[in-house]
Length: 577
Image 1 (cartoon, rainbow, N blue to C red):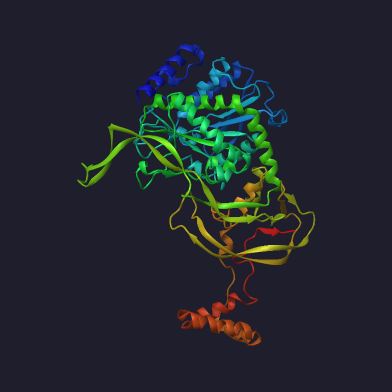
Image 2 (image 1 turned 135 degrees about the horizontal axis):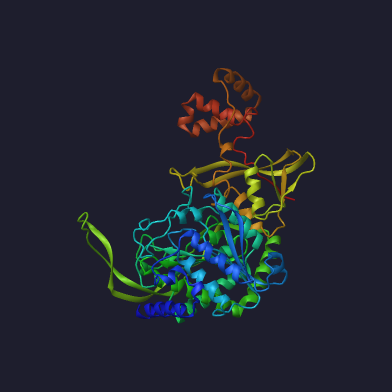
């Protein structure tokens, strides 16, 4: 810990010494105790953009706070055009800050990083573009105080986790309920970065590490990138951070047990920033500094991690660009996609963990035993890190999906995410596979404005269906194929169905008057003896059904031609060939 503190002070002092007066940050002026208010953050980056021709700050979309979302771009060539960057095979790195504004470390580290690049104190590889969103959750950043994160050790004031509508934006990347997320999707798919870094601060257990890291789950990322991330990129970052006296550990996902027992890798599915980015074959990360560490150390460790990334880019920039290009091309032709990954405890790697001994002592509040960590008893051990996940569901992609135009919220989401959709030029009849929702469970309490569905079961049938001019067809020959399967397959844990986009189909709109339908149902059964036999078998197997006339009438209705075809019929259809 002494080495870490010394490095923090040396880095802070070095920045003070090198920084020109006009470019000193509030963090530096306050001796590492403060982070700037929103207007001062934007003013700082605007000043850099005005003084250096390699920098441009643009407004791209709006937010729930009513203020625009900014992207600050460092492009030594002065092109400021993603199409040109990709044509020239330049590495595109995108840093996103303050998705949780109570975690502002990345804001201050990014301000200093860009300044030091411009002043020649940091050296990016020649063919590298750096983009920074200074503050993503503007509403939360404006909701500023000193008490919203009760356990956090600085800065003196900071923002609030929820955005202007109390959404946690790091749960919104698939459903995109907020203007922030919709703007981000447009930015991300305009830029198509190769590397994405979303800065955070962690809580949970106490330990010696200042920096922890969530790397996107390599099995879900897949392809050349997944293998490279696990075998080369992560080992480099951990070794380099250790050399910078900020030994790093994977995000301590040890809830329910002591860290000494090891933990599984955090599974960053598509609702999270890094999981969302991975769906588009982007190497993505969530650095998580430890909230109990002093603020100057946390910012210093974030800056050091940026330096580690830069060191890696000097070695591997061209390699990363080539792998991303190859993987994005390959996914266009990929036939099968894994969903609903589960941790595989049969494999693990050993990681060096620096912790503190924990114990139990009487609570001064209740008198009952409470957990505590003793910082006078540090220890270093090897822990098991379970970083392998396997899919529990595999989906073969269709040739295309067909979506009726009435589901415009779904279609708008696809378009924002760079998906190419083709409108039918005329009314058409097609042979399609149809999902029928057979069963699901729904959360009893709301989560980010939704009651999530899970454990979805479907039946599947083949039907000839009529579609209207203006309905859309989504061909599965796109770089966005991974994203499309994740959001359009109803059994996916982060699918649009799971997020309640299609809940109106789960409620029947028509019914029957029992005293009238009794006669129709009896006539229907007499003409369909096989169905009558099935009813008798069902009654024999289910005493509740056998003792309920209304339940038996409902049983017949559900299997009759009068049953509304829309009920529980999933309105995204698969063209198989």
